[in-house]
Amino acid sequence: MKNYFDTHCHLDFLSNTDLAVEEARACGVNRILVPSVCPENFLKVIELADRYDGVYYTLGIHPCFVTNISADALETLEETILRCLSDNKFIGIGEIGLDFHIDDFDKEKMESFFHAQLSLAEKYRLPVILHIRKAQDVVLKYFRSFNLVGGIAHAFNGSKQQAKNYLNCGLLLGFGGTITFERSRNIRSLLKFVPEQSFVIETDSPDMNPSWLAKRAENSPKNIVRIFDFV
Ligand SMILES: [Zn+2]
View: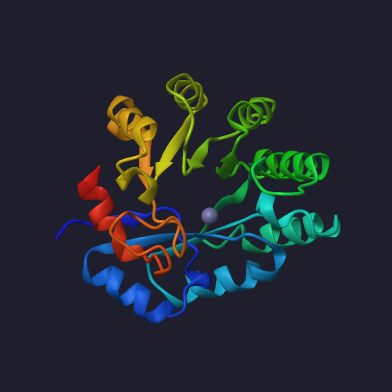
């Protein structure tokens, strides 16, 4: 049996974590990365990594969670990073980034949180998990203004040129369920051009359902096997 790594999975948002991990392992998905999204779930992702072999985590504040968060969340983040530095299950900062697609977002606040978190990634020499929507070039501009060790552009959905720019910055591109849809022509043709060693696969469970799951069904890490076959 092959060994798989789901590089982006919000295990703490799944209805039955034990079952999801068990089913994933049964089909060879032995490693799962759980990104955090806000200070309220930092302890949850740490606890999940502690509970299961092969489960890793990153710490960060997701751009879609920034609106209702106070600035001291960044202090909580840094304190938590400092506490986790010696934990080998803690592997980076994320998910962080810019989302110019959601309604009523505070652009300035979102960019300042992103900037502050990239600065933490630089300070502690940690890779980043990036969430990018309608902001491919802006995210890269910020990324380039720091001296960073790399990371993953999760659910990548940019042009061929943008993909090249990301790869040139030492980032890997993450692809998930979206590529399994016939209508995702751009992203599917992009996949043909990206070198094998330059991308990773992810489920983004419980979201980003692949084509074979009903819209309302819950995505889970075992689906990485079919996503891999599809790729
Ligand atoms: Zn995510």
